[in-house]
Amino acid sequence: DTIKRIPSITLSMSSTLSGPSFCEKCGTPTQLQIPEGDERERHVCGDPSCGHIAYQNPKVVVGAIATYQDKVLLCQRNIEPCKGKWGYCQGFLELGENSRQGAARETWEEAGVTVDPSKLELLAIYNLAGMQVQLIYRVELENDTFEAGHESSDVK
Image (cartoon, rainbow, N blue to C red):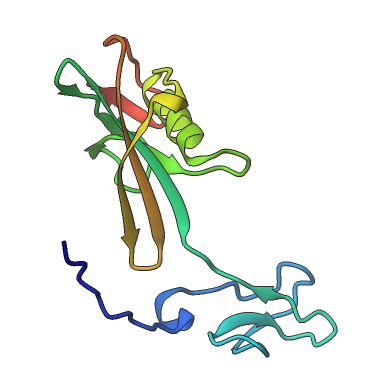
């Protein structure tokens, strides 16, 4: 098997993301600059005595494609973004949890289904233009009992 190499693309942080206008530590307006020892533009506190650098990194999204007897569990979003759209259970990874725990939590929050994180099998990893890294798992449900959680208006 041959691995195809994809050329890397270097993007300035300022061209893809807007950063904070004010320092989260002291409230001074930030300036877009390349900090010493760095190679990318960052939003840096304008107060030299503070100098806080606001690093902006991709968000980690976790999800579970849950199936039961060849049927896929889908949730209709009840919040933005994509309110009213159908999809599998997914959301942002929280601090203190691993990706399997996060996918299990999202499945509980959105569809009221308890999933054992150790039974989640990694299905795919997606990298979305430096904005998100998505880890999508699959799991076979033990039954077809579910209900819409607070972020879902319907579950099928």
